[in-house]
Amino acid sequence: MNRGIRKLFDLREDQDDPQAIDADVRASVRFAGTNLWVLIFAILVASVGLNVNSTAVIIGAMLISPLMGPIVGMGYAAAINDFELIRQSARNLGTFTGLSLLTSMFYFSLSPLDVPGSELMARTTPTLWDVLIAAFGGAAGMVALTRKSISNVVPGVAIATALMPPLCTAGFGLANGRWEMFAGAFYLFLINSVFIAASTLAVCKLVQLPPVADLDPAKRARNRAIITVGLIAVLVPSVWLGWRFVQQEVFAASAQQLLRRLEVDPRYSIVGQSVDRAARRIGVTVVGAEAEQQLREQTPKLLAQHGLHGAELLVRRAGGGALDLGQLREQLQADVRRDVSELLSERLARSEQARLELQQRLDESSRREQQALALAPAVLAELQAQQPEVRAATLAPGQRVVVAAAAGTASAPAAEPRMVVVLDVARPLRPADRQRLAAWLALRLGSGPVDLFERVTNAPLAGRAP
Image 1 (cartoon, rainbow, N blue to C red):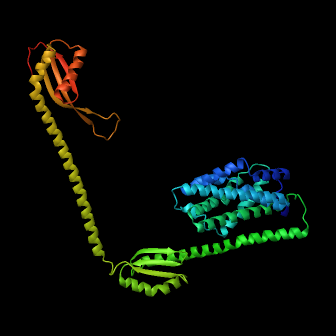
Image 2: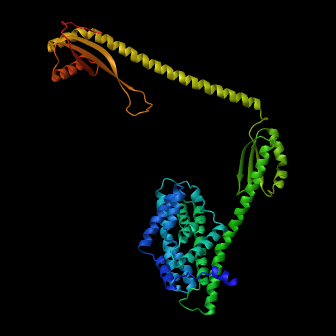
Image 3: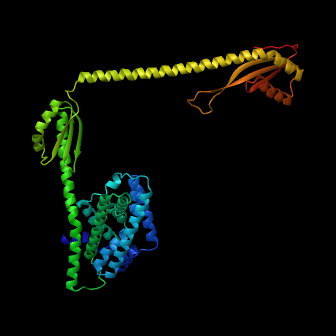
């Protein structure tokens, strides 16, 4: 039974060759070339994602970031006693960190979006839970790195531990002089780095990777003491921040229970409320002096009943009398009547405007008709002087209506004023003469485009007009 359980959890069964593991770790520690450019691009992608509050973009930056390489290299080097690799990893991690801060600070200095969103603010308050995420994520990543087959664990570790966003948030703090944001974000990055390295060291010891050199007991004890002190130094602030976070959450939950109780109490008309977790302060705005006085008297008892010891309940008054529902109903009815009156007035104004436009079009049509009637005899005489074949002329003002080509369109047809001229001719006009007459008529009548038609007839010379 015990042997079966040990075999089930045995990490050495599909473990890769130590030389291959060593080569992979050393390659990820490398500073120049591809890793450097990928880091710059990842920092810019993460900065844009944080700036526009896009979670998907931030996740993409986490997946392509090479920041975890030097951190894993430090833990691995400490496990195999390779002090040269520790120095190289620490040096490269410092360079990566400085370059990341400079790149993100450069971007945020140019960006017009200088108000931090929720994604930026989420990286400024590290707690004990971030320590656990970094430790478990780093352990999972190192287990995956020591396997023979390629695993999908590494992308998940990159997302979970989130090394890139805290550095970009720290760059935002530097660019905008928000030092509290810089301190919180950089501390989160420090937590992730230290505990990823520590869990890497633990996994390497667990799978028994061979050391490159043996250490004497005194030096081994000293190294362990340094690692322990470093872990405790990083851990203690996160424990305190985690405890404060829990206290604020408990306070917020109790405060919401108190506010819900006050909302259903018929003695109070609550019109406003607020909860300040950090200051342990609850704000309530009530209607009426009597309700304000009652609530002030009940404050100590209410806070004690809900376990809000040391909290403060601020009571404000919104009005000087009791809530008058009849008055509110009358005010609402008056508002509705005013809105309906405004709506009717607006519709009447639109109808009057449409009537005026229609009247203007009718007047214009009548004017053009009278003008055509007056010009008809003179135009016919001039036409016969140019084309003796013309026997009669009919002039009629009209409109050319263009229907929209798209089916189902809601737009009204477009109307274009035109003059319609029908010529009675002894024989058909030549195309050139017909085109010339149309151009002359448009100029002579001064009414815009002319639609010229002809019909062959043997009628005597005469002139007709509408």
